[in-house]
View 1 (cartoon, rainbow, N blue to C red):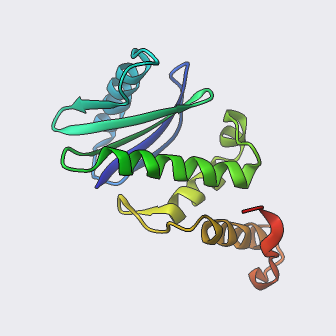
View 2: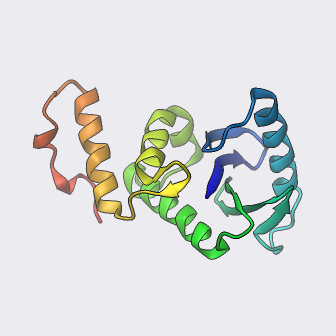
View 3: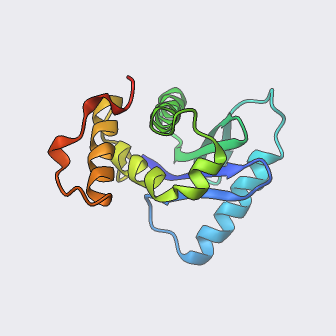
Length: 158
């Protein structure tokens, strides 16, 4: 099970956090500080898996962002890396070559995509096409069209 997901810039600024396990506000702050310091201090050629407390930290750097997931020690690291990559691919298709500024100015859309992808720390939807279709329907509702059935499926190339 994934306990939390973080997106952190190379400068250590948190761009997105999603908690799937109960943490107090103080623990969230301490955890964010500890995990970001551990990940940012590592060399690029080092392994992307870290043991932390009684959990495992798995991260991957894409451009200027670190995508970090915390999982149980019994979880498969490669599946978690695939899930991170899947999330990045969906973001990339939605934003069209996603960058850090897209996540800063459209953080609510990034959260929506993550919510469509994962629920309660488990992969919910493996289909990129379905995630993008639901996100496009949500965009249509937010723009005031009110009719999510008229959303074209060709908005995003898959």
